[in-house]
Amino acid sequence: MFIVDDLLVRPFVGIVDTLHTLALNELYDVEAIEDELKENQLLYELGERPESEYAETRERLEAELELAREVHEDLASGRVEVKT
Image (cartoon, rainbow, N blue to C red; front, top):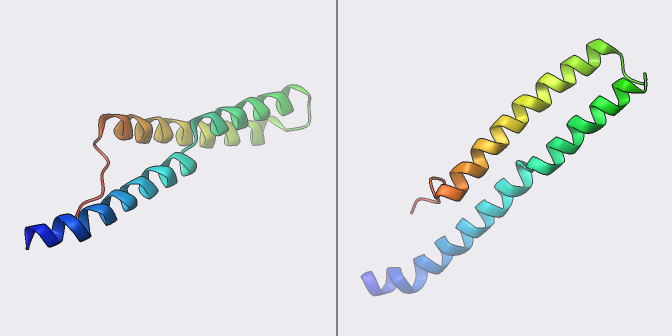
């Protein structure tokens, strides 16, 4: 039974783990969120975004950025994995 598991299940788990990692990297893209923060700041400085909208957007993006950094930290340490 263990041989069948090794031959059939492990490759599948490896593929799922890789897809899971790629999806998390795409969903929690730190650089993209940082770019959105910079764009928000620039639009506010140019007067194209009111202060209330700027502050609301900044708070949301900073929360997303913190979460994204935590996810990437967990991925790097190996704490996020696909369970069999």
